[in-house]
Amino acid sequence: MNDFDPTLDLVVERVIRAPRDRVWAAWTEPANLERWWLPAPTACRVTRLDLHAGGGFVTQMSEDGLEFVPHLDACFLDVQHGERIVFTNAIDSSWRPTTPAPIAMTATTTFADHPDGTQYRAVVRHADPSARALHEELGFHDGWGTVTAQLAAVAEASPVPRA
Image 1 (cartoon, rainbow, N blue to C red):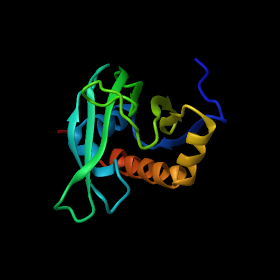
Image 2 (image 1 turned 90 degrees about the vertical axis):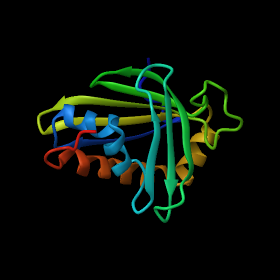
Image 3 (image 1 turned 135 degrees about the vertical axis):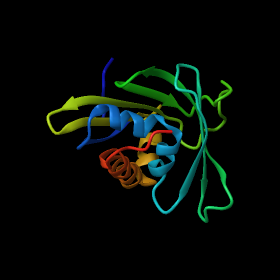
Image 4 (image 1 turned 60 degrees about the vertical axis):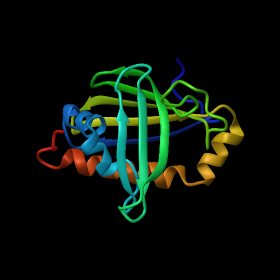
């Protein structure tokens, strides 16, 4: 599979100074994911995290930490333990097509060993150049960059709390 098409895809990558198992735990354990999934100070609640192909991925968000509203209702397409997570918001957690998805996308996150920790990469694929452009205009780099930095902070903390 072609990993990146600059006309359709956006990418964020970073070396996280933590072992891959800690970065994986920060991504895949609900209590950890809630700490970084949305840009602070927005609070996140994970209501479903079924880490297998076809499993649901559902989160809620809150500006005040009290009232939560829907954020993401997605479906995992592929999960390879410690290496890769692929999800899409074009299909919701009950396998129904979303109409319309806010910005239909498929995100592939990969985790690889690096001399300084873990090479983390998220490639977000879009159906057409206009969807890619809209996602970029709405702040993809700031938003995904911020949450990737927050993921790094969680994974680099010693130890990563386990759910």
